[in-house]
Amino acid sequence: MRTIYLTGFSGTGKSTVARHLAARLGVRIYDVDAAIVERAGRPIADIFANDGEPAFRTLEAHALGLLTVDARAGGGIIATGGGVPLAEANRRLMFENGWVICLEARPETIHQRVHAQLRTDGQAGVRPLLDDPDALGRIQSLKTARQFVYSLAHWTIHTDRFPPERVADEIVRAVALLEGVAPAAPAPVGGFQLGPKWFGRDRPLVCVPIVAATPEAALDFAAQIAPLAPDAIELRADYLADLSPDAVGALLPRLAEGGLPILFTNRVATEGGAREQGEEARIAALLAAIETGIPAIVDVEMATAPHLRDRVVAAGKRRGVPILLSFHHFTITPPDEELLATVAAMAAAGADAAKLAVMPQSANDAARLLALTRAITGGAAGPSIPLAAMSMGPLGMITRATGHHAGSALTFAAVTPGGGSAPGQLAVDELRAIWAATAAQ
Image 1: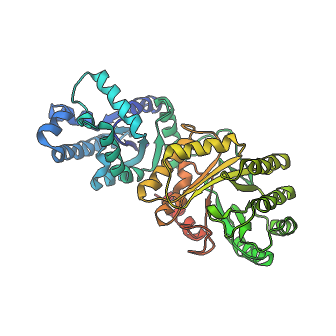
Image 2: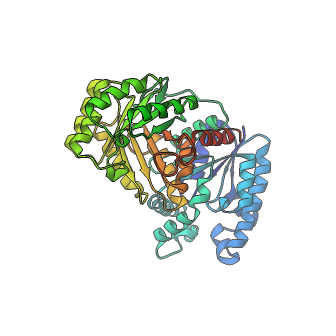
Image 3: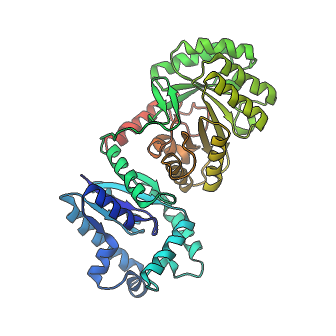
């Protein structure tokens, strides 16, 4: 077994989880901070105060190297300090010798845990993070600055609502997947069939949108997509010139002849739709699609007026057509709490699946969405319905390419580069090349 490196901000649970994980795997624990204290003969707070942070980072890198050599023979678990991944040389060492698993938590959780550890230890000053009048503010700013390097880990697990033994279970599962040994698949919780695949369990799944103004153009587009063999196609009905129920009912059977599962979307203009529509007419097209029984999924925005949205959900349940409730924000990535509440509201509204598509303002936003996705799909937060989550634009491409590692049920890709229905969509060939390259590492 390769060495497992636990990274993440101070207070995310690395040392505690390491003990549970070592008991589960029957391997030895190595702790970077403990090794520094043993070698220096002084507490970490004393090293920071008297020698400065650069001196501490030098000791930290040296300890990481020594522990890596010790662990290399039989594997083991190395619990790192919060600043270890900041140094490129440390990151390179960890990635070359093992699996890097990042433990994530919200700043408020970290603040509470660090205070609790201080009370337990009874050692004033043992936590440099608390040596500030605004300790929570310092945690928030430091964590934001470091988030990108934390996001480079092979796998991220949110620990806010997980007990440490459950986090250890998640790490075992993650390492099995990373090493190509698929663990026993759990019985699907929620989810539904998407052709031969299971939406919510089988990953990665890719869907290619059809953007066309006429039925014939849509069918021609579908013919171009077919050789790419995606898991589904999305009919963006809002691009069609004729959206009457009769036109929808006539097009779907012809489109289904291609054999690919169909995601039917009639996007509202305020969330990226191609044109303005009266809401009654827009919903009528969705209901007409459901009545055919053909779509594998029908997408309707969570922001739709509740009485209209409820009609779509009820029709889907009556006809056995899964309903995906979606949320789009083309300007920002809302706070985690807002996104989590949105997914919970989707589940409460009867959704069979949820979709979040948001715009990142920084790489940290994209990393934050991946961490939240893992928390929701891993059961640490939110409801147990499948979630497709993606950041848009160039900064969000990483979420489209690697979101399945965080548990995202579906990603969208274009036939050709730059030809998608939303900013940041990669071409199918580009996406698969990334998957192949990362699978080989």
